[in-house]
Image 1 (tube, helix red, strand yellow):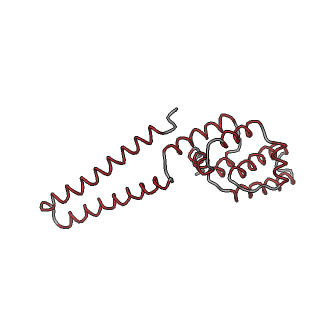
Image 2: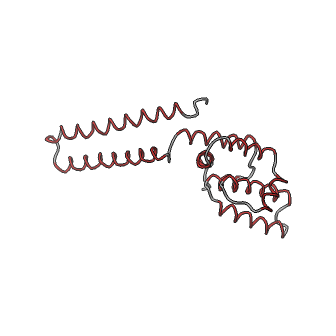
Image 3: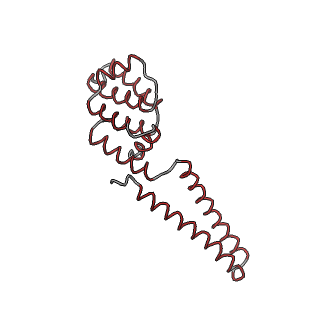
Length: 189
């Protein structure tokens, strides 16, 4: 746990080097055995190997761009576990929308809740809890909150949500936080 994914990233690097070696050896072997294969078999095998190399190259590009690392994915699981343990978010839908960076849908959910509490479909306590969760998620997504929302949040934020904000605030960029959160949330099927 103390490695924060560094050991896993090292293993990923080793596996990728081995995969590259395997693909290059496959091409070399194919060239050496060209005389033993008919032309169609040779071309098909070479095409498949080149497609595998292309897919491998795409994966490398993603890793180099920072779109895919084990450190973020494993850290995401840890963040999701921390959020669950601290019970910072009690509403799975809010966690899912937060993890998937969907501020528009969070705002839509908030509007639906405003309507539901007015017509009595939603209790004031549930409304307050979920609104605080949504506003916290929106803030973490970098969304601008109204002065009214900021006041509501400061008056109603729970200790666990405040602690969650402190913990995630110390972790680094918002993208890392989102990558961490999204890896720990399963999509609805």
